[in-house]
Image: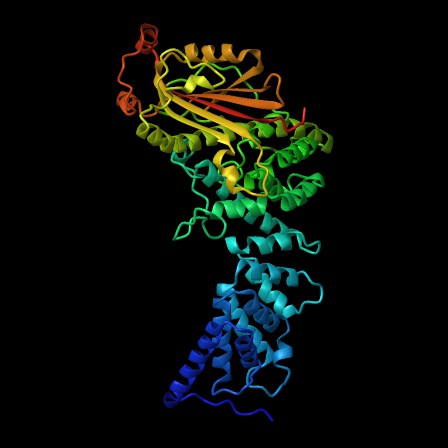
Length: 536
């Protein structure tokens, strides 16, 4: 017959506090003998005034001091509580013990302990109760869960839905880590913000905690970009049969700046490009995640096309937007498209969609690099330099005469980050971004840059402007270089902005002629160079 549980009275509070003090003292003793007593207390030996309070105190103290020995005790209490509480007549049952220990562990478990729990979770003979508890705990999208989630990710028994969820978590962490290293942010106040896009809430907890940890991005990157998880990811890429069904996997791969991953993703995209990028748009790859800038080169290698590439140059902003033509509503008398016709149109639709993705990537990166350039500009000012002072030194195109550079961003990846990425082999990449603002004739500057890029460039119209793109091999190297030049009419039309960065010199005579009857223009040049993902 079970003993009646004693009810604590106000007069007995001192005894409870005494037990808690003894538990703390035993933990501070930090000896095998002291830990053995703590484990016996979890088992109900010796008997204390309030068994439940004692178990809670021991659990919390052990969890708050996560050494290997303490974690061994907690692990045993979680996975095999019946060994400590075998009887049915005990005031605290085996399940009560597990629940108390789990409550303490869930708020203080170390990354090492979480990984150990993940390995146990993958065992086929785990109890349903523990599986349910650990599943919710390890599934939380927290940086300290990343190692455990990588273990779960490699489990063959994981469901497809859970797999996609983990890939979304990994992509978020990889994206934020890369952004910290490149010093760019996903959300800016550029063109897309003015077009009314709502910010998207990121998965889980932001990478920037209340107390900023500068080492966190590198720790996450070492986890995600190291050889073992990258090899597993690349194997999965080789098995892709549909971009729509594996969009989370593609988005994750697109955030990893490693040459072997770029090559594997290149093959996957070329094998399945006819599926189109529809599924990728749902992952936020273009406008929310910070992808590897080299992903732009991969997209440019895909078959793309756009109707009407005749470019007339940027025009001043219109006060009233023209209403787009409406499509006639289908009627019952219109014949339905056959499967053959739909299959014939799919590649053409995919080509146009990939062109849209490449355009959006270019515009998004220009926004982000412009914002990041403000930081580099401030640094340059402190060193006594002006933005664009040596812009032509390594820019693959020559700036037009009289160009007024207001922002410049450049990175030779991985740069200093490589020293913090032990176990990772980041793929080298050079990024150079320049923005100029001035008054000029649109067709004059457009023609100037098209002549530089010659016949290997393509021009497109975009909202309020034009975009010239080029992708070519760098002679006598294994590198490919993407060049994008975006021309847009100024929206503020404020000439005082020219003097914000200290450029108070009068334009030369030729530029003055353009300015007399020209347009206030923004010209952005983006150059990205990396190893050819095709391995040529």
